[in-house]
Image (cartoon, rainbow, N blue to C red; front, side, top):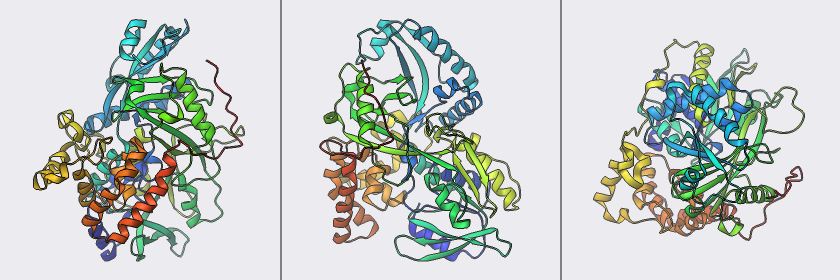
Length: 539
């Protein structure tokens, strides 16, 4: 993917695009892949970088949703379990099987959760990742040696999936590009144009790097802007009612020592109504998440003090070494674009469905919102079916259920630290071969080398320090301080690749440091949410 080439395509386009997608997260990327692989002319526009919003801030799980089963949403669970299996088959370099254990501290938990997980296994059918099992105390401690032992009776083990969200996202964007799609980051839609009948017929977009305006015609326009769904809808109809109910979730990153091994921990019930995960990820321990209703959305939401304390205290009930604020390597926040429930009045978002909605406004703008990473492919198929009807396009079958995603590699574990790149790892190694200096680690506390920054700039449209350190690599999430320390060196690498001067480097470092500061909680006071009343958890 080359941004200059993508801009040139948009500038020189004379015919209407079949489908224009607004939004470069999981949903938008899925729609672009589905439409491009059916042979439609597709343009995707993203105001910031691909995945800048919610899609880079997940719990890093590809899962059916155990708690949705408890809520009785069997259809959502079955759909997610099927899509989980399809994703493992189509992107084995990104998606991995991960064992989870639900610890049992009461006599009733083993039979209760054991039966529930057997139902989970049954619903997965041929897409199962493995059978669940009731574990003895000794078996539980062998797999989770750092779990709190006081009162522990055993556990229930089950299988789910894990992935790197923005690695998958970039692979999806590249897949779409491989099939002819045009993709632009830093190009926001500022206006939706209409025909004489009042129906949306295109988009006016602005290149965020140059200020160039593009008047783009389209047979069908898809709004896949996630947390900015209603903002985009108002470009066509300023008076539309809000359909999204945003919910905030935070994740804390700790050293690997808090969860030794390759097994994850699931706490099925927390005080805010969500499950809590402690997951091994990229050599660290990731713990989350909360579910806090919020009123406003942004690309860089702040955690609330109560959320941090809640995760620390809840995790401390189950880990032998209780994590403290000083142990946090990074805190990141994601906002879920949940669909408002009709008649809902309690203000809680933990009970809202994680299913998706396709909505068509009077203007003909097609909006898809809700859902989750696991079901992105099915959502995209449904969305493109609707978009082709609205755009009066020839009907063509969806092919993504059996299509390999860019980077496909069946034995990526053999690639070591470059495993998440799959088949692209060979090209990164070629960069190192041509310039051995690119083999140097970015930082002793980060699992990345300089060649990855160069690769991302040349082939993945990485344009800023934020792109390189938060999404192409995951440095900011793994260790925010280390990411800040390496920022000047990475800025120099980027500047050399995309033709920027020293003033640009200095500005990039300044803005990145300011943004990254909120990922480092020690010594920092975050806002308190007056709507939060999370009581301290008693051991």
